[in-house]
Image (cartoon, one colour):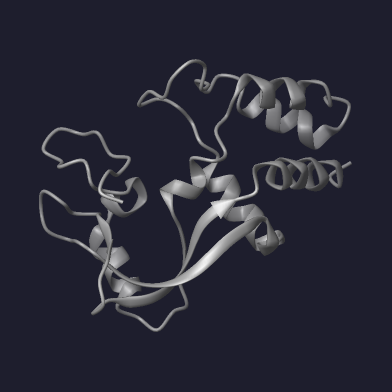
Length: 156
């Protein structure tokens, strides 16, 4: 992907937010033998925080876990009419849910690397000379939100 999710001064717009904050640390992981499951921005774009999701959680407030989730995201800007720089996607939640149930996503093996030099520091990219990783490139939106409900209800 040529467009990242970093819109900061002096950036070229290709960086991924988490890699942008410490590209040298990401490079160190990429250069190690640690297995990598890389969650793509494309997959997280399938799990935006919408008004329908907020209402879904609100309708299940009787469950402590879902009440907590709903209240936790209550002040986060939602995706209403069009994407903005403040549109929130449940990327961290997707990563966590993947560990509970890998069947909610589609994956493929890739070879990639990360740039550490300005102005692209934090950009992850495909390259034949890079590191093998398991790319999470798609998520089943319905199954994802059902899994959140299931896990949160178990908290009761």
